[in-house]
Image (cartoon, rainbow, N blue to C red; front, side):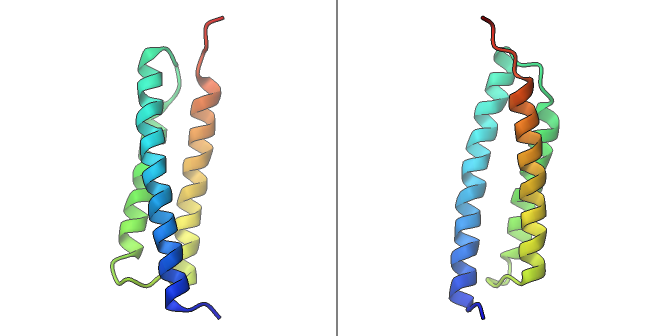
Length: 93
C-alpha cells in the first residue's frame, strides 16, 4: 500500500521532471530555429499538456493511481514528440 508521503514524493519527482522537460524544450526550440526542420509545435503542445496535467493532479496534494496513469500517458506522449523532434534535426557535416 502506498502512503500519502510516497505519493507526495512521486509528485515532487514528477514536478522536477517537468521542469527538466521545459528546459529541454527551450533548448530544443532554440536548436530548431538555428538549423532544425523539426516539428517543434507538437513538442511544445505535449510539454504544456504534461505541465497542465501535473498542475491538475496536484491541486489537492494527493495523487491517485488513475491520476498517476494520466500523467504517465502525457509524459509518454511528450517523450515520443521529443524523440521525433531530435531525430529530425539536421546537423551539417
